[in-house]
Length: 375
Image (cartoon, rainbow, N blue to C red; front, side, top):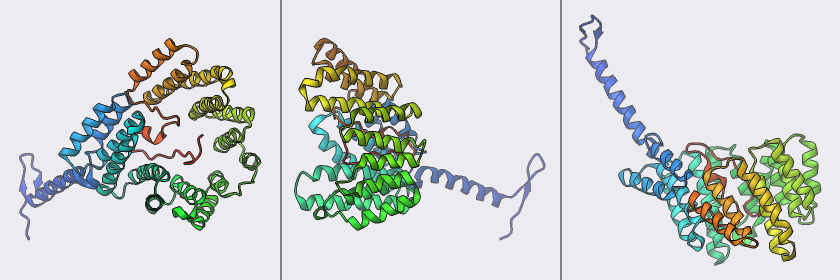
């Protein structure tokens, strides 16, 4: 087809056909921004909801996201952030958490369905799949086996998109190496993934291998060798410290975790784990509680001094209120009220909330904590 060009007032030649093509291109790009991957133009609503949740306004975040989804049911980012918001809220609702987990899993499934190539959504789906599988372990064996199988599939789907997503591979090692065969665990699969991690990174490989070692293995000695072979690696030192705590070597464990925090202040979660470790010691030995309470409070105060995000600040404040009830009920009530003011849905669970909840929208989570370990 012949194109007839005309001159503009400025003397430039304009081709109507090219102008139409340019116009169509702009429209296509605009629509692509709106609908590509179930898009959210681009993640603006999810980002605003995340900021609301981080400021202690999870209810407002939930409402914002639900309204966005009602207008665009294919908004993958909104479904993802709604899933995180629901889990966040559930952790603050005690026994109601089971219903929240179910809703959160449904939401992340919709995010994956709308944007199947997004590895961020896939990985959070693994998190929710694990929580469902973990709950199912207390019930019917057939149902538990089905949930474990689904969790395996979710983790493998992450690796299909991103073979270097080592946290998902570590989950596969732990699921298949720690659970029994009657629940669908496959020890050969655990071994295969462990070898791949060993080839990729010495410390990640050591984490994987530690899961598969015989029960009689001295894991403190094992991790000491890993630390010696990887000087300056704070992740290896972190594992040595936690292994010492799990082995009852309190002084060594706390020293190593303190060294981790000194070397990398971003790893302030070790202070929460030191506090929780002392709380657990007090739960096992009532006579030690009065001696341990100041150690708990010191660790929590140091953690709070690092300026954590508001939901975790509320969580740490809530832990402080628990230990204060033994000695100062008035102060305990004040701290409890402060925690609720910071975040009405702060986690009432003893375990530290998964850090996946606090990763900014659009960023991959590369936090790893063992699924079946208390700290």
